[in-house]
Length: 229
Ligand SMILES: C[S@@+](CC[C@H](N)C(=O)[O-])C[C@H]1O[C@@H](n2cnc3c(N)ncnc32)[C@H](O)[C@@H]1O
Image (cartoon, rainbow, N blue to C red):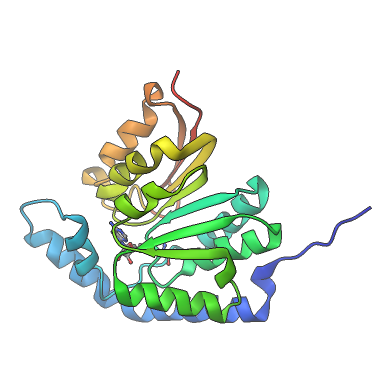
């Protein structure tokens, strides 16, 4: 017996919103990226969570479409019940994860975004795509909001790389054994990348992770929380 197969990325309502969010980020990111890089060059101290959200306000910084489709495939394959996302912005990655949850017929995504206008934009985009039932966008600092969600199967990190370790450690006690953590942009700022502390942590097997680096798309780190030895 064959079961019905569905790919919500092909749903015109979903794909129209995905295309619109991608076009928006292509339009606003050159300015947004310039603001962030200028701010970085001026700084003598690391960004706080609030400061980086303000610096990023002009851009959207959506993940590449290939990462969006990777997230869709991961979610279809592992059928998570609980997914967390650090950094929702206008919801490009979020739409892909939500589409996969709908196709699975189960699971829930908790997004996190500290910029109020982006929270509103993401909620509107999800509603227009018909995917709002699968997602709650938590407004506030991800290191506080995401730590309240139990039994996490998949954590997608796409905020500021310097803060990945803060967020992982806030969530860690709620990770299910075998949980998957997908961290984007870990190579974005080269050797001085803020992801350094995060990478050192997940690559140290004493912390309970099995981790591998992919160098495409500015680097992403895929880690499985196997549990501490
Ligand atoms: C790279 S963008 C996210 C892109 C999004 N995942 C997508 O594919 O469309 C990073 C976002 O993280 C948000 N952010 C950064 N630090 C945060 C924090 N501590 N808590 C919540 N949101 C944060 C920023 O405001 C920004 O919108």
